[in-house]
Image 1 (cartoon, one colour):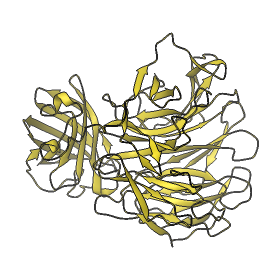
Image 2 (cartoon, rainbow, N blue to C red; image 1 turned 180 degrees about the vertical axis):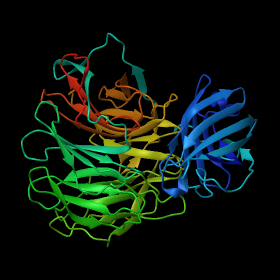
Image 3 (cartoon, rainbow, N blue to C red; image 1 turned 135 degrees about the vertical axis):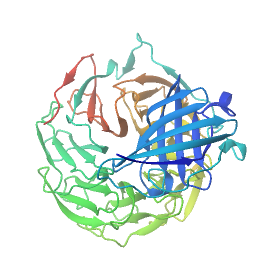
Image 4 (cartoon, one colour; image 1 turned 90 degrees about the horizontal axis):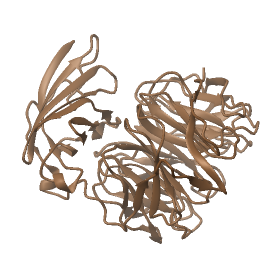
Length: 524
């Protein structure tokens, strides 16, 4: 293997008030360069992510990380797998200097001048981000939220029954590939909920369809289509008004973005493309945005701080879309969430700023125009994802957001699509990476589920106030959770949770009225 060494200086912050001026934990951002390193300290062990904000590539997880006094060492791997980068740095007060060693596998590409590349500037000075601006890990000053762990003896009751949450699981695949999302719906009209896996991300893979036998098992599985592509999402909707669920696949560049139409039996063909192949697309959502009764597509593009548009692609009828989409936002985003945030009956959308900046709710004028926008969250928050639900029973849509450096927050709707500052739900060392809301214990109150980087997912069970939650960890700490979907897959009356993961097999955790230990076989 060849080696290329250089030094990189990255501004740093801190994840707790006690370490605002010392220690390696927190967000380190390059001075004058679109680079970010998130470090989480657990004793002497370091975990986290390395990110080049402007390239549209998701952060790379840190591995083999450790701390020895004021010296930190960790590794990260480029998205194409060609280069392994070893970082060694020394923290001195408000400054830090990192030395990088890039190992290039035999036959691999050397990369460019970025944080994952093999060439570029040799030396930089690092300064703590909080020295000249707001501490990047300062929590928004919203109303307090209580979150406590569930005791081993505690029972979560719903619908008059005790629910044993996620005590049984099913591996959906035997392999640990790069999956980014999962969707649940009845694809072949047999009354059973099926599963679609969005796979690939940075390495082209084929998306998969898993057909349910009615018992939460998936003996029949096939490819969604023929294409191997870099998929981030596979949203389900009846796009051509024929009564079955079709699939919208959000693919990263240079792959075309695809609409798969269902023949009614759970088999699909490409019916249309949407947008342009060169877009750095992450998730593509579906909602009727112009009130014509046809589902439209909203495209989240992670274009970096340099700019670039997110788009609405209108349904032209019969599930047909084209490249003539409408630019609606220039916020770099990995997800955009449709929701009626102001209660006027029109679908608005929430655009979280992924790279560190102001996030907005864009309000629908009733004709598919979104020029009016309302800010939420901190002006420098790096929000990966937002979920929407009425958490406190006031019939207003609230927001839940995850920020890798700060944690998970609830933003309560004050009316007219204005939101209170975020109230911290979690942020104790884990790196949140996936988020969803659902009523998990059947008490008609919306709960919150957060997936993490190499840590167990957590379900936050809401008491109905939106301010008091019981935290229930479940599953294992393998891989990175990228997406959730909910549905009663085994038809026992209780919701189950499907998780798309990278670096670990995709999995379903079953809810139920009685605890059942053990795993079922993987789907072939």
